Length: 87
Image 1 (tube, one colour):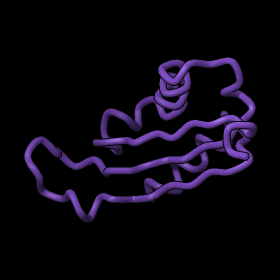
Image 2 (spheres, rainbow, N blue to C red):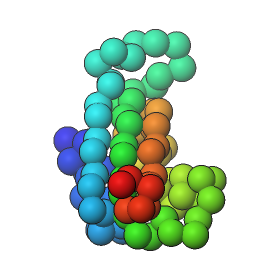
Image 3 (cartoon, rainbow, N blue to C red):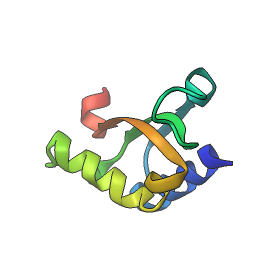
């Protein structure tokens, strides 16, 4: 299952205090441009985002998911926070 695969990769790379993955794929099935990947929104709270800009944080998440972005994931929303930003 793709959400489990996403969780595994993000947990390995970020050791997050919190990880939440919401699968919105069913609401987007068959829309124009979607050639099969799912729609997901992830929230990560990790110390690895300390000192990083929003763009850098998103780049780190995309790098962690690697090839999944080509086939398994069609759209990805990212909320990447540090522990202090979540308090």
